[in-house]
Length: 158
Image (cartoon, rainbow, N blue to C red; front, top):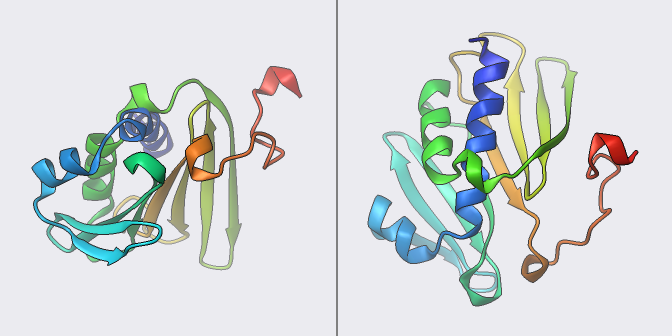
């Protein structure tokens, strides 16, 4: 299975479950977080050795986004964590994708029915180095407005 296919499968699996995940679930899996801010509520969890995840909540403790910054942990570990916190059932149907590279880095956006997954990319050794990733959930409670992005529609609708 190619790296791209593995990433897409992983990200597809990961985001739908997270949208329904509460702070209590993350606390059970990863322990007591550091609170980064109160409004909006952000918690920082240590999810693997040398890797943190920042979770941003909306009203009613709805998970609005996840961010895993680049770290010394390998890309394989990043994908394992994403699969655990945002399984495929959470993302919904895949709509579109776009990869942009500039210089030595770039990003890949993959648009799903219920989330947008962004993976930071490195031009060199991209299968081994963790450049970071984020998942933004399309939740009204988080301020999501349909049509915010040109690619945020199913292919057949454009």
